[in-house]
Length: 351
Image (tube, rainbow, N blue to C red; front, side, top):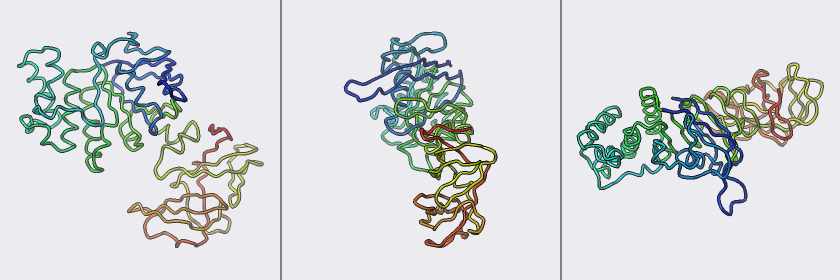
């Protein structure tokens, strides 16, 4: 187990218009389950490769505990990586795949098989040890990949979109399995995903990335409830946050079709109001914070997202099934004053 420290790291690929990592600093605690979250191309996988030693920074420092490892080879860092495509050896048995890292270290066969069996048991793989990995399901292969990473007792376990090839039900099961394995092994985990549900359900802390920069680092509740800027607010949350452009005037937010008190937040000038669908209630138009026309209904099973056109902008409300108004009808919107987010023109969150 190890603490991972990234200090002002710059990394750029030849011919790229912008750096893959642009001044990234990050401190991941020993035994923490840390998730790097962001859209494709934001730099999260590049950061993972730097920690693994598969890439090297142009500037900045990378430390495992107190050891500077900028140019230390991957084999000497004692970190393990689980890839999106599993990267297993199809000609080998499950047992041999799990034991392979110990074989490379020239561990005696009896010892490496004993260690492999112990890890396999913790992941429910004992009945499969004699099988070829080509005979396994996607979920079983992912368990084998995790077992192979854990058998070497790494200081840090790196996971790059490990569940993206699984179906929805298997993803839920594997999330639970990975959380259990982390609780038992207490290995430091750095986990990369673009799936916010994975991030918020699994992480001790999340680092949200965009265009090579860390936008915010914090616990899941902090990221969701107190986003640092409009990008984080819009990226985290499903259904997504709605944004309404307007202005502040005498403690009130004003836009076409919207007038809502800001509860003493005396912000004047151009503003963007952010509100999550579960903080919007449909009500009678008379005296409502906003009035608009139902534009679209999106069923989520038990709930429905009601998309309301207010002026030229859209607001989403989350309502229970069976309580949805018809498309084209006029509705009032009541906004929960305690759940309103304000952003300036640059996208920064306002107090």
